[in-house]
Image (cartoon, rainbow, N blue to C red):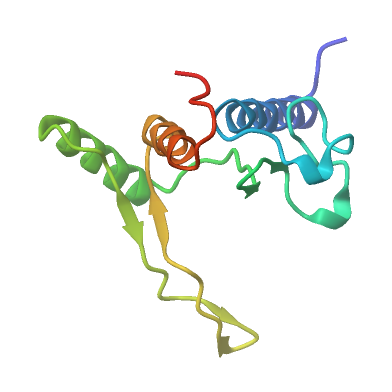
Length: 137
């Protein structure tokens, strides 16, 4: 029986979470504190009281598979293209200015967006600095 739209979105969403989990386990490693509670991909979404999708040694990760606003996508494409032409890594910093909860200012931390390749490189270097195995290339 073919899947309806809702089932297809849910299936893609879960696969996206699994992909993030695989990536984090490959480059960061598992969190030994939750051994036996996570899935083989590091997912913890079934433990709803945790309120995030994936855990690794360093990260509690929330995965979103959404359409990116056009402006944000334009900025990201622009900086990744320019950075590559300059032989540099891309960084997009977003400083939220519209954070209010119940009418009161509730400042959120700024976002630093980098590529997955750069993130993997930084995790590899962090492992080396910590004296751990180099892990995957």
